[in-house]
Each structure stands twice: as C-alpha cells, then as structure tokens.
Image (cartoon, rainbow, N blue to C red):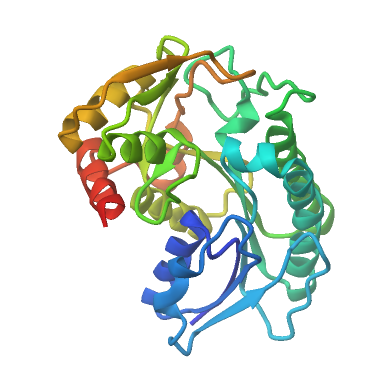
Length: 308
C-alpha cells in the first residue's frame, strides 16, 4: 500500500487518478480548493477510509503531517475559459504551487509527477509534436498565462531533479475527454456535446480546419501509471496521434448524438493552436503505452454522462 497526494484531485483528471489509486488498494490524500474542481467528482470516495480530502490552495504553503510516497501535481485551471478568467491564479499555481509541491516531495522523500500539457508547444510550427520540440509560444498573449506557467513548472521540476536528486516525472497531456468534465468547461468536447444535446448550433472557430487529437481519460490514466512505474525523468507525451479537424469532430458529435444542430462559424481566438498532434514514439518505446479506446467508443460514454 502506498500513499498518494493528488493536487487538483477533485478535478476531471485528478478524480479519475484518485479513483484508480483507491481501486488498487492505496491511500489517497486529495487536495483541492474547488476553483475548477467539483465535490461531485469525489463524492463516492468520501466514505472510503483510505481517502481524505484537504481543502487547500496549493499556491500557499502546504503542510502534511503523515509520510507520502508519491505527489501528483494536477492543480491548475486547464481550459481557456478558466485561465482567461483566472490569469493570476493560473500563473501562481504553475509557479508557487509547483514550488510548494516540489518542496513537500523533497521533505517527504516522495516521488513526484507534474501534469504538464501540450500547450507548452504553443501554436506549433511542426507536426507531430515530439518532446524535443521547444514550442512556439506567445508569452504575452492571453493564453500565455497557462502556457508559460506550465513551461516554468517543467523547468522547476527538472531543476529539483538535477539539483536535489528528486525522483520526478513530467507528463505532457494532450486533449483528453471523458466523464466528469464540466458542462461549461469551455473546451471543444463538452462545448460540442452540450450544444448538440440542446439542439443549438455547434460553435466552430475560423473555418474549423485547425486540428486536434482526442484521448479518452482511461487511456491517460493508464499512461500516467506506466510513467510512475518507469524511471523516465524527461517530459513524455501522452495523447492520441490520430488527428482530425475541428469541423470533422463537430460533424461526428452531431452524428453520435442524433442532433439536428447546425454549425456556427466565429472568428479564431488569439493564438489558437492550428495543429495539435502528439508524437508518442517515446511513450510506445519507454512505457509500452498507446491508446486503446476508440474515439467513437469514448465519445458514446462521454455523451451518456452529459445526458444524465
């Protein structure tokens, strides 16, 4: 039995990690301040004696009395709607929150995993994006608060690994979807599903030719577990290399929901990435991981979650 601390544990991905660790018989401390997480995501865990919730903002000093084996830092606004409304908290949780959780890991001699993002690549000039690509980020644009917070978090995590010998991991997460996403998350999957279920036009920016790749949350959790079990300290992409245009994705959602929704075109937001496709060569070679859940299968499960 190991003891895990998951920051942002009441969020979409964090709650799935908490559930997985509990299912495997481990103890879980879930730390969240509900800025973008939700109590309903962890409601079924609260009676489990191996689960404890801590209401805390990780941008402030963290104090945990008991020993810890692993710390997974997932606390952060993660959708454009959130980090445009919360620009300074987003920067703080990437900088101060990462510093605080790394310091805690050092004091507990615990393993550490940073949840990074494909957004560190910005609006990439290469496709697919490999871990060696340094990115194309506008540091002073509206999306820069998230992109640069994560880039800084990666730099600090590597500094703790190199200077203090901390046992660290960095996962660069590409577009992930599934149950427990928020209705008004602002990202393309919940946006399209909710608009389709309501019979409203699906909002497509530009001509919808920008590309995305979509990974079901169960596959992401499996990849994260493989990374935790490895000894790989450099960033690693976890995503689905199958790329499709946003317009193609909108048409698929309309078909799967049986909706009569149409498409509404709006101007492209500033710095909106035009391509997003992970190179998962390292994940396949080092972790023996690749996506298993087909897009249609995952979307059907996600649509049913939103229906209820």
